[in-house]
Length: 158
Ligand code: CUA
Image 1 (cartoon, protein in one colour):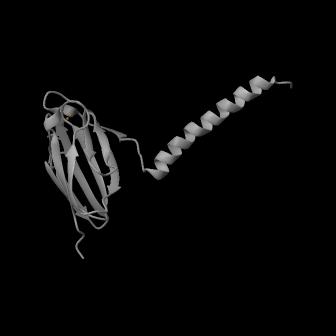
Image 2 (cartoon, rainbow, N blue to C red):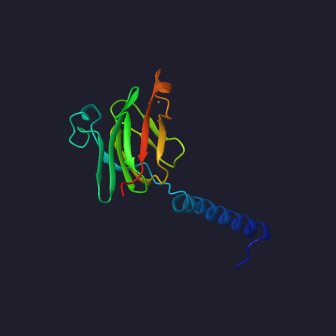
Image 3 (cartoon, rainbow, N blue to C red):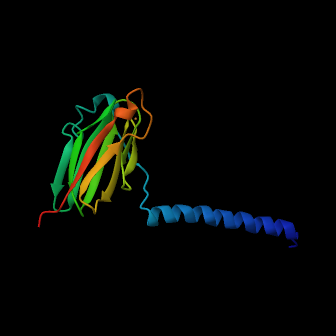
């Protein structure tokens, strides 16, 4: 088959671009530990307070690490202060009771959206003990700039 030079050139260029785009996804997943914000677990946003998964927001620590159950609402996070152990796997399970909020732990790679109707879940490890600011980074209304919470990463008990 005879393919013209310029056609070959453009086919190769398109092929290289496809490989480059796939590579950016691979680098994001493997290098920066990026994950989709949800695992498509749904929840009725009007029943979050009564739902057994979210009725007791807080931190549970066990041998494998910690699980944080929290939610966002206009204009704050419940619980407003989260304490987790350093160097252990911490799984966040969160949702929203009203509109879409953001959940960014400043200075870490923890960053997700809290979308009403869905449970956002991700797992991360905090190596450095200390106090971290949590902010809402999705515009959610007039009090958006007031929406914050605190994460305290505690030195692991010997
Ligand atoms: Cu919640 Cu912005």
